[in-house]
Image 1 (cartoon, each protein chain N blue to C red):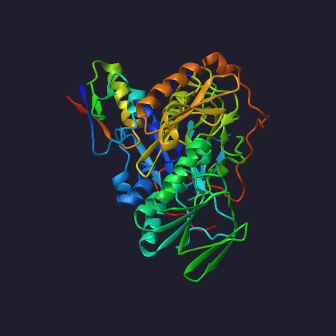
Image 2 (cartoon, helix red, strand yellow):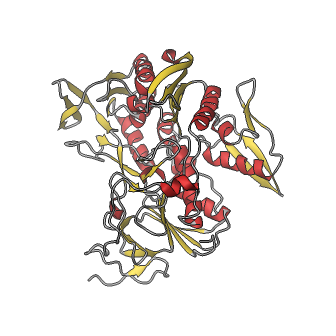
Image 3 (cartoon, rainbow over the protein chains, first blue to last red):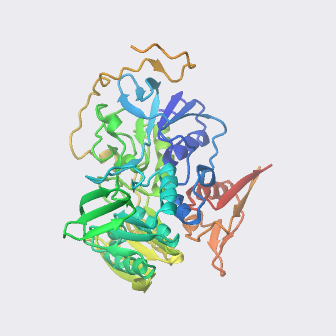
Length: 438
Length: 66
């Protein structure tokens, strides 16, 4: 399969992964059409900047907009979501009744925040944080209220809590884990970061879950499982997100917790479809053969570029996608790096004083192999550890990729297009007058 | 066509991801800031552009000059 076989590539998803995929197609000399279907109305922006923007007030799509070298080659379809995939006919079905024919497809639909049972979502008082519109709404709310309850102390919850608190809001964080950021940085840095938040005036309640909500007028009361009640003017629900792959449900792809890909990012069960970013579940053969999702900026950049290569090269010649993951967070001016797979074994201090948030912990797996690290305020140590993980867990090759088999059988033949959603015109046609309602 | 690599030190938070992506172009100086060695060849220039795309603060600019 050559780079010049495909003439029409559709990218579903207008985040950083989709953008970098488009950029890479152009860089590779692909000269066919590129159509990007993006559910959000905004041009791609720097999503990690949203929490930081809450603090210093520069949240706007313009201020966070991503630069890219697209050379005017991309046709954008903003505010349009995919609702289905007819893989046999090679069509993406869209929520405005149109469809997008493709020869090659790049899936990059990202995620949607999870809702908390009982909590009304996207009201003035109970919000989630994923998009720039979410961030703008939260900032507006924060300026009007005195207190915010943050449910969930992961990356989004903890970063937002710091930003809101720094802006003068009274903040309570409730998290099910024993520390904030427990699943991101492990227990030891988790303890240190939880203490840091407390010193800065964030009320942190760990080991607790919200069992019931009471939306009184002008107030929210969350009842914890142990009976405690926490009142606040507004709440941010930050208990994670689920991949936006519902539209692939009947396509022949395995779309449970992300779309299942092989080592090269090709979607298992479909031809000429690759996936990248938060919504893709793939085996990183550098570490093991188990498909996983990675919700990280740098991985989305790398995977977008890799998926473009994989689509152009075809499944036989594409290289396996096997980065050493690099994630970061910044809380109260403390920079934390998460490298490789920090929670895949036992963590031990290797540099400085991690308990005072100035040092590094490294992770060894059962075989004594260096597989990950968490690093606080030591960028030079991060660089060295990242390289060391890469050396300890070498890059797989084409043979390794070819030998991989999906963990469970997936249906071979794509199902027909979902009923009741028959699209009537392709989006590549010039827009005609709207057809009369059926 | 050459490219000039530039780091905006007001945006830069010195995470050093650029040092991982393009070690021959970016290095941490004694003052803690990222120092740039202008790319010596096309491969180094490509790595610098890659670092520009990865930078979490979008603090790197590789502008084209003819």
